[in-house]
Length: 72
Image (cartoon, rainbow, N blue to C red; front, side, top):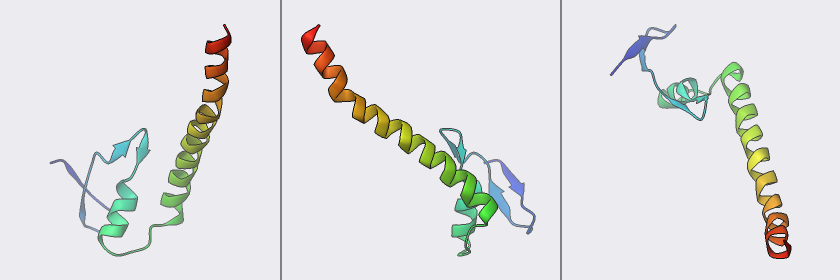
């Protein structure tokens, strides 16, 4: 497994990226029982909120698409 040395001297893993979101800093903080920094949480929260908005708007469109398919 690839590892990098963090600023606090502990080896951490690379590759915690899902849907373009990097969870490495969050997982590292929780693994060592520390609160994640604001610089780690805010971008992650922003991306999760953005994906949630896209998914919710797609779900709202489903009944409209169903009506169009039945009529046309």
